[in-house]
Amino acid sequence: MPFMISGFSKRNPNVGVTLSTSNQQPATSNQQEIGDALSSDNFDFPIMGRPPDIDIEELDRWDHKNLAACRPSRLLPLGKTKS
Image (tube, rainbow, N blue to C red; front, side, top):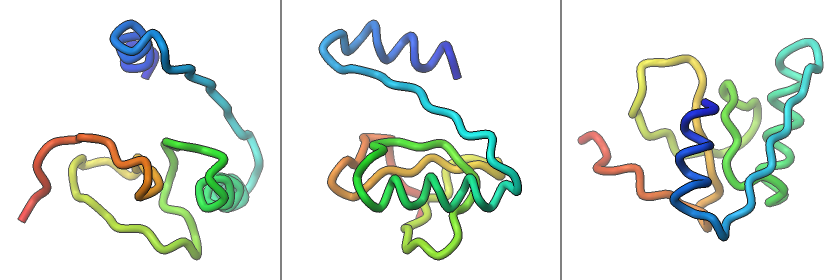
């Protein structure tokens, strides 16, 4: 993750990057907190487990239990979607 953020920052020097972590237990509390922040447009791009009770469109890109999410108004060019 640090390499991705560093590379992004170097290619996009005019874009601010703020990192935030949450150590809430249980993990579902953390997912709910992040899901709420995403829904209210407080996060542009969280990396998290599947949030409870949030309507998301899933793009099957990685074989991993975490997901990357962004609001539809902040879509990122991640390449072609699977058919």
